[in-house]
Length: 459
Ligand code: C2O
Picture 1 (cartoon, rainbow, N blue to C red):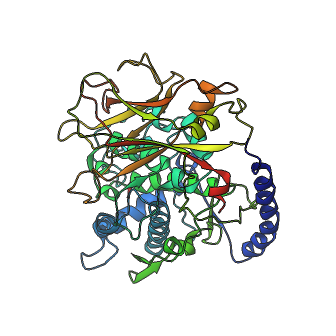
Picture 2: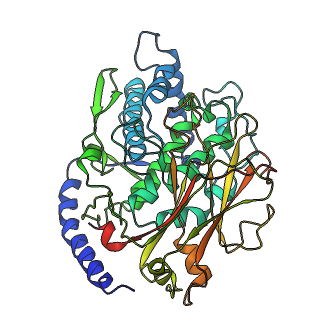
């Protein structure tokens, strides 16, 4: 452990204590409704959502709140692959929930969420003939979102990511500006659920499928829970960006990320969150972390034709990084000396054909396309969503993806010397429908391991 670590941790927990007080006074503001797991709704509660959807589809075309116009807001401005992804979708859901309330004349309506971790099938109420909740999809009523993307251990690992960038995507100057920098919550469960479901869910018109709103409520829940013990960005560029929506009455409305940071202040919490906030991590940090010189292993590659064997990419690991990788605490409860963030740059989805996802392995000398994800060298899988140029001109060659590789390094080298001079990253392409490896493996234009230390993170 680096000598400064302990001090930093103490500093952080002191900040936690002060904020508990500030938080309770915010609580007094108004009643806090509960967004529930959709499988726990009463028939009457579920019917409210059904009715709200129906009424939105029946509004006259001139009304800015119609079902189709709601989806168009998404198609025209949803940010993906950057740090506005989470706050934009939170605000979008909140205004949508208000529209539902208005149309139902019922202020107690709460949007439910679909917890794909505990219920990997779409709830049966979203398949009923003639129901407003039914929608054309590629997945079947008995199809499940694979645990590889949404399983308990995948979500637990995401919840344990210390920094916002690796968790919830990286900086950009505007909603759809700059290359994609997708964090793990977005590119693993979020993207995968969109693509597994297929139909409209596989496109930026995805809010046409009534399950979309429950899918995003679950992503929002994960963010809300993560933020109970972690810090959101403090950068003005993030906090102050105006985002435009339509409110309950159909009037134009603006929200900024700084307005949506505390769900209780917005009038809701999730049923998995405690009634009173235990504490809120108050010390914000800047996400423009400088990666300390010498702690980054990087390599770049020329465009290579797709290969049949898993694509292996090698980066030299400088001495300092190897030192940091040596003698990692083998107990997951022990604070990390650093987060080892794997950065994959310029991995582009194959053109045409069936949707794929990618399995990522580190330092696996015996890797074949069939190596299972239970292998200790496995880092994570991720899925592409809207990353063709039709959807997003910023997708593609310059895009990057952040994955937390700390657990893998700990598993492989915990309590031991890091045995290699290099770091080898390999990608295996999987057919999304069959979950079988494909012959065609994709390549990354750049790979990098960054050691993000606690000090950078709390800067
Ligand atoms: Cu903006 Cu999950 O879509």
